[in-house]
Image (cartoon, rainbow, N blue to C red; front, side):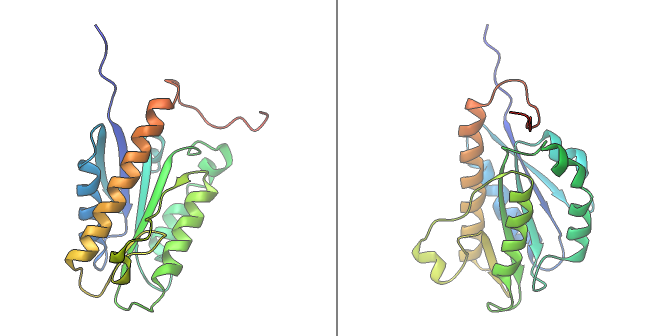
Length: 185
């Protein structure tokens, strides 16, 4: 009898202040649309560093304060030991942000999140160009400006779906024994 593979866990960690929680819900809905993927929500106040070790993919969200919030940055700073060991390398990552102004630095916030994901060795998944980007979103991730609109939720759903699809594909190729990167290789 063959054993069913466990679902690919896609962890969404976000600072829930502002409109970020609403975008997170859309990201989670997108993850839920992918067969073999399991959405896993952790608002920042509930997130544990150990969650990063057991997820297969990670999507970070932050309100746009002309960059990520200090609260999220502080939490991420305490994952430095995982950076040193490479335990997150090879996992799939993405990001999203919400702010009040289109020109208020949302791409700067996404780029900071992207930098942190890449520093940990994650495989980054953004959003490809679409006509929707004339109104919402960025290549770097999902965005909202002011009130979260239907188009913003659609971009966030698309991001969750894309990250989950890539994580499921990579999960099929991943060896059964997970481990960090051997720097001697």
